[in-house]
Image (cartoon, rainbow, N blue to C red; front, side):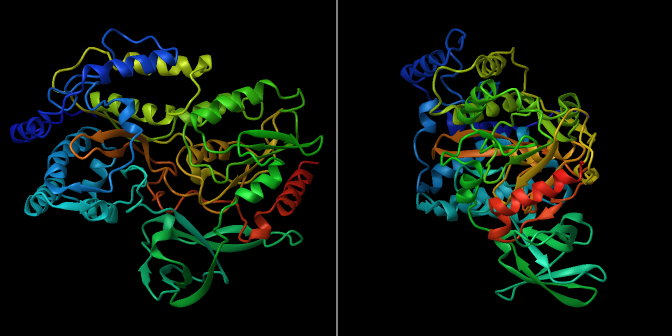
Length: 520
């Protein structure tokens, strides 16, 4: 389906007023050219930055700011009148590019009223200095209706929430309708949302115990710590998993204190691959690692892929070709359904993402990374389309995460996969989990992922009057294929590792050994 987003004359005038005095200096624009050139990119004449990037008419180069702006810290407070000007610009960005715009409307959200009330509130505060939590409180009301962990002020998780996982002490004998926290708060479980229902899984308690069948619940962590779930009118005790940093446990299993991409052969039949956050730096290190691996890597019968404490970034799916059925994985990747608005601002905001994720990277880029960046940079200079119209692509998921079932047979010539995840695995870490779960024979173990895989493809920009660094999701995925919630609930696991001991190397290696024996 296609539509044209029409911004009212009043809004256009407000945008022009909000940004008519925001101009980039020749030095800032030339500095951007020099930075991009230092990365080995071919920069078109004049560079990507406009002198007045926030003034209509909007193009793929609108809202682009110098990379140097991103190196400054977030402000601690903002002037109400400055934020009022920026809210007018924020509306343009969200109306043209926000992947959750239509879904919020379906939930009954009134965008016109929300922006008008926010503007009115700021107008009443005059030039007062506001703490960010106070200034951005209206954004919290939006998150209360539609939890979106990819949208909001950068680095300030005022309104977001990852997931928590809790194991039930008994099997539910009917529908589960409420959860209770240790603080005594009661939350209703939406019967229409499969994400909120308890799930059946295997539970591994310690290094010596075999797995046993049980039920567990995933829920947004900001609700508190659950201690009970009401099912069929009866309360069942629930106890949360060990939700602490796994960094030390990961280091012991990886055999290295440096949390960078690493591989080790545990035996002739078993390997271990550590994939920390998919930063561009780690992507370059992974390519170097893979080029130096022995011939035996890829010929194991079982591979442990450790994705715990991985905050996402750019998922290196193609780089795992020696271990996975790459053509099948690529079909799964390309067939992830969802809702994706496209406009000139999509291009601009994705380049903002590149600016942020390129900071601190060694200028000596690999050919693959440099070629990818060059393609994006060239896209900024595409001929503008009058009015910056919005087209929306809605697609159905080809392979849905709910279709994942544990089997013992991996793809021909490939190892069985044991994928380790936790509630710090987010964004492209969840996308990687989704892709690996589609591999036959794969097992997902740990606890539910963070839950930042529903509203996807973050676009980055800086609001000029306050210098607030912001991001919004530029798309919405349907990773389960049935519309259930993901943000704040995460992706489900086959085996829950609820304790520190179960998350440790000895227990994981014993589990891997049992999975390996199933192949014989």
